[in-house]
Amino acid sequence: MIKTNKISDCVVFSKTKESFGGFSNMSPEFPITVGSLEFPTSEHFYQSMKYVDHPTVQREIFGEKNPMLMKNKQKKYKSLIRSDWDEVKGIIMESTIHLKLVCNWIKFGNLLLETGNKTIVELSKRDPYWGMILVKGSDTTLEGENQLGEILMNLRSKLWINETRSEFRSWNPEPNLRLSFGGWDLSTVKVDQKFLEVGERSFRYLMDKHLPPSSTLGLAA
Image 1: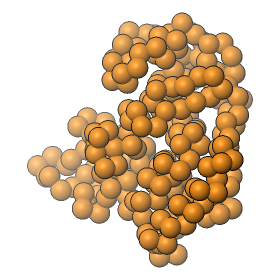
Image 2: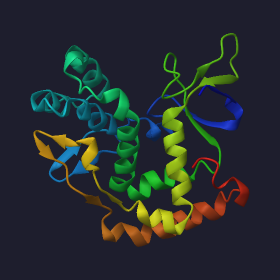
Image 3: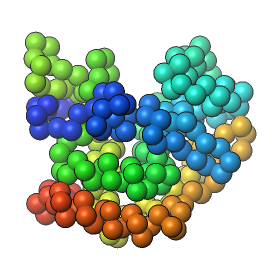
């Protein structure tokens, strides 16, 4: 569904080095570790899940550290993308962002909570599906589906509440999504115990600082 938003009402990101650039899947600040595998960015993880039936392509993606080069290089394998990709890509993106949080519990959790209850938007020049683009003739109004922003805001809403926050302390790959790498199914990832107590203190400080009206807590769910 196409939405419109004023830039002034949003937390907007487009480049990884901006204040909220860590929300970009291209950001090297938030690597993803699953078992012995460390994906340089969440984009590496997401793109590699397109090719679960082709481990050689996955390893090529994994081996290119630059996320933009990686994304461009794998375009030549378009014909090898899993046949159910259009049906599962949204769920896999949700799973990717959840995993990004688990692997970077304090830092990424803090980044989410720093946005308060503002709409999170990836400003794009040509992708109104994952992000939003400027309305033609305007430099203040955005339009698009903002699918990535919705996923980020939904995760943020879970962090606000203790019961749901605790549910997101571990990442369990759903069998139906066929999340594998190199021919091996991926395993559960949990937040390291030493980060939990520090994270709770940090989260509480930010929640007190950015406490939204109670009536808005569920808006992004």
